Every structure is written in structure tokens, then in C-alpha cells.
Length: 215
Image (cartoon, rainbow, N blue to C red; front, side, top):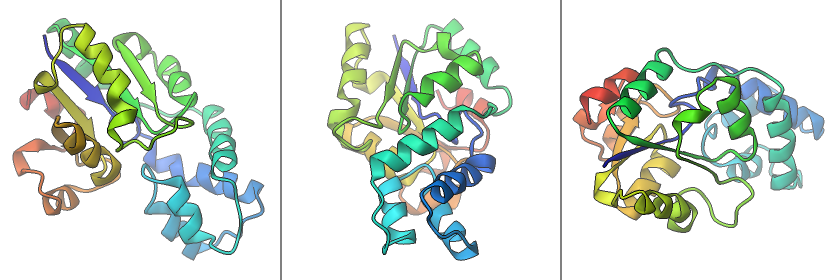
């Protein structure tokens, strides 16, 4: 038996087009100044680190990271985020072939909201949402419960593929726990950024459905 672990945003959920506007709403609700400079700087952190974003964009403002993220999550959960084209077809094909699927995301409770809303929740044997847990996404301790669940289902790490769209934390996480990594070059980080990070060209996909050619 084999398994595929998916990041959500930028891999299955096409959240990048609206992601910055939702973070902007959260920032405004905390009274943080918003201009083109802050927006451009904050955009570099989408899908990566909220704490680094706050420190880099608004260093003179003391904002609690957990409170900011909770505010953003509430704003985001009220709005619809679409799937990338053919994601249901991809997940159906994989599960029909006997693959076990897991979701591993920086989100918190809103992950399940979006999976339910887009009607793909039922494809996943495990959904691990890192926000609010003690360890960051790239820390092996964060993904350990997901890997343990897959082990209980008879899946060993060498039979797991992790699909992500960031050099950090996604690629870093896969390397830290020894998982094969497929880079979604259509998400936050580009194919060129993944190549620079040492990901082979043949392990970079331009659309979700291209994943089937790599497995």
C-alpha cells in the first residue's frame, strides 16, 4: 500500500489569488498600516510563516501571532476558496488505485471547513492541521502523528510521497523525515525556486493532474 500526503493551500486549494486580501483584512483589524510596500513584503510569506511576516512587515508593532492567525482564519473561513482544476478527479483516481491520502497543512480548524465546503474531506484518511500545535510544520514532531497513522495502515515512509508548494516549510519537512517530495510549481514557490533548492526537474509538476505521471 502507498500513500500521498498533500499540503492544502497552493496544492489543492487555489487560495493564492485571494490570500493576500484576506491577510490584509486581518492586518487592518489590528490597526496595522497597509500600503503597497507592506503588501508586497507580506506576499512573500503566504503559505510559509505568519510570525516572520508580522516581524518583517510591522516590526514596530507588537501583535500576538496566535491572535492574528485566529483572526485571519475566521475571515478566511467565511469566504469560499476554490479547488484547482481537476482536483476531485485526481483524488478519485488515486483512491481508486488504492492510495491512502493524507492532508498536512499550516492551517488550523479552517482546514476542515474548506475540505467540507469543497466536498473532498472524505478522500483523506488523516488531516493534520499544524496551527495551534507546539511545533512548526517543518519540525518532524508535527508530522509524526500523521506518519504513525499511516504506519498503522501498513504504509512505510519509503512508500509515501509528500506534495507541497513551498521550499520552506514543505520541502524542508519532507527532507527532515525522509519522504519523497513532489513540488507543486503552480503554488507559492515557482519551479525555478524549487530547482534552486535542489529538487530535480522531473519531480516538479505544473498542474495537479501531472502528479499521476510521477507516481
